[in-house]
Length: 325
Image (cartoon, rainbow, N blue to C red; front, side, top):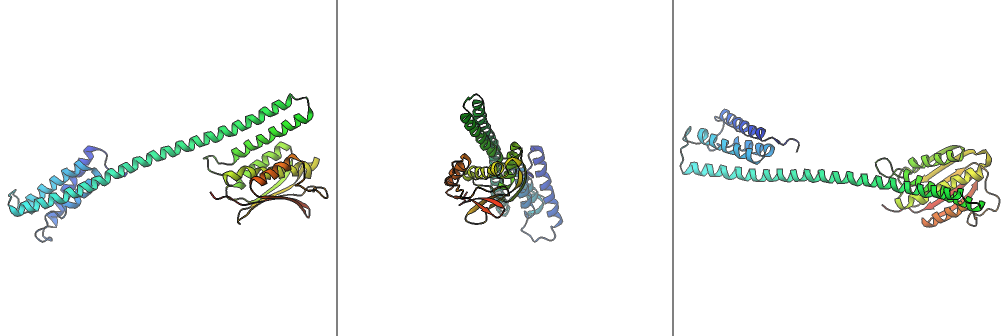
């Protein structure tokens, strides 16, 4: 499309040059051609002009070529004598060039419309992506505002339990806002789990004032949009459990996160080398808000959550079936 001649004077110039070039080439090859082929070099000139310059320049090229062929290459030569055979030859030439110009000009129009449609769809796609990013940004900000309002409300509460509950709720809502921001990259595409998990966990570690040696393996694929928030919440609650109960006041240790997405069942594993749960601890019976959230998220995923002690490591493991896009 970029090779099409847009300027009318340039298009007519192409038509004249093409006709002259066809005439010169036909004149040079005249001794090589048998009688009866006066238009052999002129047809390509008309086709090329129609493709690159459009309808009217093509008509001009066709007229110039027809006149040149009639005068120089149709007997009696160098005259405009007309008889039956000349009339048949000119009619044949006119028929062929009309068909050529008709189809090539139609093709040009179709390509031009296609180019315009592509430009329109590209503009719509850009507008859609912009609106999506803006919506995503506003949703995250609104969730963040809700969390901040809860914390402000907590500051004015006299009851210690109520204040603690509101602070926890505000913190977790702010956490969901952080997850929403990290789930997509700068152009609105889903980010691989590994990419945003590292940022979310480092942010949580800094907020708690902990010194954690963090290792993340697997998770090279994005999470399904319906599963991203519950999976990430399970990871974060397991991580916070390690900070609060595993590492205690030291606030330092190792945490290893792994998301295996290779099988029919995806497995998220969070290990820490802190103090393990007490003997006889049953996470399914715990009244801890964090573990209740984890159980609710596992139920939402139709998955299974386990907490075990394996050697020197406390292991939190979530198994769930991935959803198809």
